[in-house]
Image (tube, rainbow, N blue to C red; front, side, top):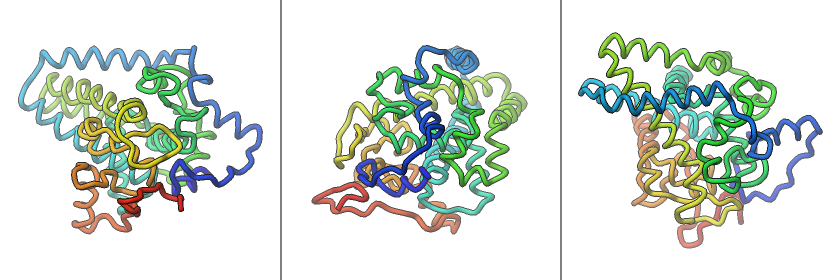
Length: 310
Protein backbone atom coordinates (compact mmCIF):
# COMPACT_ATOMS: atom_id res chain seq x y z
CA UNK A 1 0.00 0.00 0.00
CA UNK A 2 2.25 2.86 1.08
CA UNK A 3 5.08 1.74 -1.15
CA UNK A 4 3.06 2.84 -4.19
CA UNK A 5 2.99 6.40 -2.89
CA UNK A 6 6.74 6.64 -3.25
CA UNK A 7 6.37 7.06 -6.98
CA UNK A 8 4.88 10.50 -6.39
CA UNK A 9 5.95 13.62 -4.52
CA UNK A 10 4.24 14.95 -1.43
CA UNK A 11 2.12 17.17 -3.71
CA UNK A 12 0.11 14.18 -4.90
CA UNK A 13 -3.62 14.83 -4.86
CA UNK A 14 -4.90 11.29 -5.46
CA UNK A 15 -7.36 10.41 -2.68
CA UNK A 16 -5.93 7.98 -0.16
CA UNK A 17 -7.64 4.56 0.02
CA UNK A 18 -10.05 4.09 2.90
CA UNK A 19 -8.49 2.42 5.93
CA UNK A 20 -9.99 0.24 8.57
CA UNK A 21 -10.07 1.50 12.15
CA UNK A 22 -7.19 -0.84 13.02
CA UNK A 23 -5.08 0.51 10.15
CA UNK A 24 -5.76 4.11 11.12
CA UNK A 25 -4.83 3.41 14.72
CA UNK A 26 -1.58 1.74 13.65
CA UNK A 27 -0.69 4.59 11.28
CA UNK A 28 -1.27 7.36 13.79
CA UNK A 29 0.73 5.64 16.50
CA UNK A 30 3.53 7.87 15.17
CA UNK A 31 4.13 11.54 15.81
CA UNK A 32 4.48 13.59 18.97
CA UNK A 33 0.86 13.39 20.04
CA UNK A 34 1.02 9.60 20.19
CA UNK A 35 4.59 9.19 21.44
CA UNK A 36 5.34 12.16 23.66
CA UNK A 37 5.12 11.94 27.44
CA UNK A 38 6.75 8.54 27.62
CA UNK A 39 10.44 7.81 27.61
CA UNK A 40 11.93 4.73 25.96
CA UNK A 41 14.31 3.77 28.75
CA UNK A 42 16.49 1.36 26.77
CA UNK A 43 16.92 3.76 23.85
CA UNK A 44 17.66 6.67 26.17
CA UNK A 45 20.28 4.71 28.10
CA UNK A 46 22.05 3.76 24.88
CA UNK A 47 21.95 7.34 23.61
CA UNK A 48 23.48 8.63 26.85
CA UNK A 49 26.19 5.97 26.86
CA UNK A 50 27.14 6.60 23.25
CA UNK A 51 27.36 10.37 23.79
CA UNK A 52 29.55 9.86 26.86
CA UNK A 53 31.69 7.44 24.85
CA UNK A 54 32.00 9.97 22.03
CA UNK A 55 33.40 12.59 24.41
CA UNK A 56 35.77 10.05 25.97
CA UNK A 57 37.03 9.10 22.49
CA UNK A 58 38.44 12.60 22.03
CA UNK A 59 41.02 11.78 24.70
CA UNK A 60 42.01 8.46 23.07
CA UNK A 61 43.16 9.56 19.61
CA UNK A 62 45.35 7.43 17.39
CA UNK A 63 45.91 7.48 13.65
CA UNK A 64 44.76 3.88 13.37
CA UNK A 65 41.55 4.82 15.16
CA UNK A 66 40.98 7.73 12.77
CA UNK A 67 41.49 5.52 9.70
CA UNK A 68 39.05 2.92 11.07
CA UNK A 69 36.53 5.66 11.75
CA UNK A 70 36.72 7.10 8.22
CA UNK A 71 36.37 3.67 6.60
CA UNK A 72 33.43 2.73 8.81
CA UNK A 73 31.78 6.12 8.26
CA UNK A 74 31.82 5.62 4.48
CA UNK A 75 30.56 2.04 4.80
CA UNK A 76 27.87 2.73 7.41
CA UNK A 77 26.67 6.26 6.65
CA UNK A 78 27.25 6.69 2.92
CA UNK A 79 26.96 3.16 1.55
CA UNK A 80 24.68 1.87 4.30
CA UNK A 81 22.23 4.66 5.14
CA UNK A 82 22.33 6.95 2.11
CA UNK A 83 22.86 4.53 -0.76
CA UNK A 84 21.15 1.47 0.72
CA UNK A 85 18.51 2.11 3.38
CA UNK A 86 17.35 5.33 1.73
CA UNK A 87 17.80 5.29 -2.03
CA UNK A 88 17.78 1.52 -2.59
CA UNK A 89 15.51 -0.14 -0.01
CA UNK A 90 13.09 2.68 0.76
CA UNK A 91 12.60 4.27 -2.65
CA UNK A 92 13.85 1.50 -4.96
CA UNK A 93 15.63 4.07 -7.10
CA UNK A 94 18.00 1.49 -8.56
CA UNK A 95 18.82 -2.21 -8.48
CA UNK A 96 21.86 -4.19 -7.36
CA UNK A 97 22.56 -7.91 -7.00
CA UNK A 98 21.12 -9.43 -3.82
CA UNK A 99 24.53 -10.21 -2.35
CA UNK A 100 25.51 -6.55 -2.68
CA UNK A 101 22.17 -5.37 -1.27
CA UNK A 102 22.76 -7.55 1.79
CA UNK A 103 26.34 -6.31 2.18
CA UNK A 104 25.19 -2.69 2.03
CA UNK A 105 22.35 -3.39 4.47
CA UNK A 106 24.77 -4.85 7.02
CA UNK A 107 26.76 -1.62 6.74
CA UNK A 108 23.65 0.41 7.50
CA UNK A 109 23.08 -1.44 10.77
CA UNK A 110 26.49 -0.16 11.92
CA UNK A 111 24.92 3.31 12.16
CA UNK A 112 22.74 2.26 15.11
CA UNK A 113 19.62 3.42 13.29
CA UNK A 114 17.77 0.13 13.54
CA UNK A 115 17.16 -2.76 11.20
CA UNK A 116 16.06 -2.40 7.56
CA UNK A 117 12.32 -2.97 8.10
CA UNK A 118 12.13 -0.42 10.92
CA UNK A 119 14.13 2.23 9.02
CA UNK A 120 12.36 1.76 5.70
CA UNK A 121 8.86 1.64 7.19
CA UNK A 122 9.45 4.75 9.29
CA UNK A 123 10.79 6.68 6.31
CA UNK A 124 7.93 5.65 4.07
CA UNK A 125 5.47 6.87 6.71
CA UNK A 126 7.42 10.14 6.80
CA UNK A 127 6.96 10.61 3.06
CA UNK A 128 3.30 9.67 3.14
CA UNK A 129 2.50 12.11 5.96
CA UNK A 130 5.36 14.59 5.68
CA UNK A 131 4.85 17.55 8.05
CA UNK A 132 1.30 16.44 8.80
CA UNK A 133 -0.23 14.54 11.70
CA UNK A 134 1.38 11.11 11.97
CA UNK A 135 4.76 12.17 10.55
CA UNK A 136 7.27 10.51 12.92
CA UNK A 137 9.56 13.53 13.05
CA UNK A 138 8.17 16.83 11.80
CA UNK A 139 9.63 20.10 13.16
CA UNK A 140 6.06 21.39 13.30
CA UNK A 141 5.96 19.49 16.58
CA UNK A 142 9.23 21.06 17.68
CA UNK A 143 12.80 21.19 16.42
CA UNK A 144 14.08 19.09 19.32
CA UNK A 145 11.35 16.53 18.69
CA UNK A 146 12.25 16.27 15.00
CA UNK A 147 15.94 15.95 15.78
CA UNK A 148 16.01 13.26 18.47
CA UNK A 149 12.99 13.60 20.72
CA UNK A 150 11.05 11.16 18.53
CA UNK A 151 13.76 8.55 19.10
CA UNK A 152 13.88 8.66 22.89
CA UNK A 153 10.16 9.17 23.49
CA UNK A 154 7.48 6.53 23.20
CA UNK A 155 7.49 2.79 22.91
CA UNK A 156 10.14 1.39 20.57
CA UNK A 157 8.65 0.30 17.25
CA UNK A 158 11.32 -2.25 16.43
CA UNK A 159 9.05 -5.06 17.63
CA UNK A 160 5.89 -3.69 15.95
CA UNK A 161 6.14 -6.22 13.12
CA UNK A 162 2.53 -6.00 11.95
CA UNK A 163 2.57 -2.21 11.55
CA UNK A 164 6.07 -2.03 10.12
CA UNK A 165 5.58 -4.76 7.52
CA UNK A 166 2.51 -2.97 6.14
CA UNK A 167 4.88 -0.21 5.08
CA UNK A 168 7.70 -2.52 4.02
CA UNK A 169 6.01 -5.60 2.53
CA UNK A 170 8.84 -6.06 0.05
CA UNK A 171 11.39 -6.44 2.86
CA UNK A 172 9.05 -8.57 4.97
CA UNK A 173 9.13 -11.20 2.21
CA UNK A 174 12.94 -11.41 2.39
CA UNK A 175 14.20 -13.78 5.09
CA UNK A 176 17.56 -12.02 5.35
CA UNK A 177 15.99 -8.61 5.97
CA UNK A 178 13.57 -10.11 8.48
CA UNK A 179 16.44 -11.78 10.37
CA UNK A 180 18.65 -8.69 10.28
CA UNK A 181 15.77 -6.51 11.44
CA UNK A 182 15.52 -8.69 14.55
CA UNK A 183 19.26 -8.98 15.14
CA UNK A 184 20.45 -5.63 13.78
CA UNK A 185 22.79 -5.25 16.77
CA UNK A 186 24.90 -8.28 15.80
CA UNK A 187 27.09 -6.56 13.13
CA UNK A 188 27.89 -3.75 15.57
CA UNK A 189 29.06 -6.21 18.22
CA UNK A 190 31.15 -8.15 15.69
CA UNK A 191 32.80 -4.99 14.34
CA UNK A 192 33.39 -3.69 17.87
CA UNK A 193 35.20 -6.88 18.84
CA UNK A 194 37.21 -6.70 15.63
CA UNK A 195 38.27 -3.13 16.35
CA UNK A 196 39.27 -4.11 19.88
CA UNK A 197 41.44 -6.91 18.49
CA UNK A 198 43.24 -4.85 15.84
CA UNK A 199 43.56 -1.48 17.54
CA UNK A 200 42.54 -1.65 21.18
CA UNK A 201 40.11 0.63 22.96
CA UNK A 202 41.02 3.75 20.98
CA UNK A 203 39.70 2.10 17.80
CA UNK A 204 36.55 1.00 19.61
CA UNK A 205 35.88 4.44 21.07
CA UNK A 206 36.46 6.21 17.74
CA UNK A 207 35.15 3.58 15.34
CA UNK A 208 32.02 2.82 17.35
CA UNK A 209 31.08 5.49 19.91
CA UNK A 210 32.31 8.70 18.26
CA UNK A 211 31.44 7.66 14.72
CA UNK A 212 27.96 6.43 15.61
CA UNK A 213 27.12 9.51 17.67
CA UNK A 214 28.20 11.94 14.94
CA UNK A 215 26.45 9.81 12.32
CA UNK A 216 23.19 9.82 14.24
CA UNK A 217 23.20 13.59 14.54
CA UNK A 218 23.99 13.93 10.84
CA UNK A 219 20.97 11.78 9.96
CA UNK A 220 18.76 13.56 12.48
CA UNK A 221 19.67 16.91 10.90
CA UNK A 222 17.96 15.70 7.74
CA UNK A 223 14.79 15.15 9.78
CA UNK A 224 15.01 18.48 11.59
CA UNK A 225 17.17 21.13 9.89
CA UNK A 226 16.12 20.39 6.31
CA UNK A 227 12.49 20.91 7.24
CA UNK A 228 13.25 24.27 8.87
CA UNK A 229 16.08 26.08 7.06
CA UNK A 230 17.24 26.30 3.47
CA UNK A 231 16.00 26.97 -0.05
CA UNK A 232 13.09 25.47 -1.96
CA UNK A 233 13.35 24.68 -5.67
CA UNK A 234 10.03 22.84 -5.74
CA UNK A 235 6.66 23.79 -4.23
CA UNK A 236 5.90 20.63 -2.30
CA UNK A 237 3.11 20.29 0.27
CA UNK A 238 5.59 19.88 3.09
CA UNK A 239 8.30 22.13 4.53
CA UNK A 240 11.29 20.34 2.99
CA UNK A 241 14.35 22.50 2.26
CA UNK A 242 17.66 22.16 0.44
CA UNK A 243 20.54 22.59 2.88
CA UNK A 244 24.08 22.63 1.52
CA UNK A 245 25.73 22.11 4.90
CA UNK A 246 23.53 19.14 5.82
CA UNK A 247 24.27 17.72 2.36
CA UNK A 248 28.00 17.98 3.08
CA UNK A 249 27.58 16.09 6.36
CA UNK A 250 25.43 13.34 4.90
CA UNK A 251 26.79 12.69 1.43
CA UNK A 252 24.00 14.54 -0.37
CA UNK A 253 20.96 13.75 1.77
CA UNK A 254 20.59 17.43 2.60
CA UNK A 255 19.15 18.28 -0.83
CA UNK A 256 15.88 17.41 0.82
CA UNK A 257 13.41 19.55 -1.11
CA UNK A 258 14.73 18.02 -4.33
CA UNK A 259 14.24 14.60 -2.79
CA UNK A 260 10.69 15.20 -1.56
CA UNK A 261 9.74 16.54 -4.97
CA UNK A 262 11.21 13.50 -6.73
CA UNK A 263 11.41 10.74 -4.07
CA UNK A 264 12.40 7.88 -6.37
CA UNK A 265 15.28 9.72 -8.03
CA UNK A 266 18.68 8.37 -6.98
CA UNK A 267 20.14 11.80 -7.68
CA UNK A 268 19.30 14.34 -4.97
CA UNK A 269 21.71 17.09 -6.00
CA UNK A 270 20.02 18.26 -9.19
CA UNK A 271 22.22 21.25 -10.03
CA UNK A 272 25.90 21.08 -10.96
CA UNK A 273 26.85 22.83 -7.72
CA UNK A 274 24.79 20.48 -5.51
CA UNK A 275 27.40 17.90 -4.55
CA UNK A 276 25.81 14.49 -4.00
CA UNK A 277 28.45 11.99 -2.90
CA UNK A 278 25.97 9.15 -2.42
CA UNK A 279 24.76 9.52 -6.00
CA UNK A 280 28.37 9.43 -7.17
CA UNK A 281 28.75 6.18 -5.23
CA UNK A 282 25.76 4.74 -7.06
CA UNK A 283 27.23 5.88 -10.39
CA UNK A 284 30.45 4.09 -9.47
CA UNK A 285 28.48 0.90 -8.87
CA UNK A 286 26.87 1.35 -12.29
CA UNK A 287 30.29 1.79 -13.92
CA UNK A 288 31.39 -1.45 -12.26
CA UNK A 289 28.31 -3.24 -13.60
CA UNK A 290 26.82 -3.62 -10.11
CA UNK A 291 23.91 -1.17 -10.37
CA UNK A 292 21.23 -0.79 -13.01
CA UNK A 293 17.84 0.79 -13.71
CA UNK A 294 18.78 4.11 -12.10
CA UNK A 295 15.76 6.39 -11.80
CA UNK A 296 16.49 10.11 -12.26
CA UNK A 297 14.33 13.17 -11.70
CA UNK A 298 12.79 14.58 -14.87
CA UNK A 299 11.79 18.24 -14.65
CA UNK A 300 11.98 21.58 -16.46
CA UNK A 301 14.75 23.69 -14.84
CA UNK A 302 12.90 26.85 -15.95
CA UNK A 303 9.61 25.70 -14.41
CA UNK A 304 10.51 23.10 -11.78
CA UNK A 305 7.58 21.01 -10.62
CA UNK A 306 7.46 17.96 -8.36
CA UNK A 307 6.76 14.50 -9.72
CA UNK A 308 3.06 13.93 -10.41
CA UNK A 309 2.29 17.60 -11.02
CA UNK A 310 1.36 18.60 -14.56
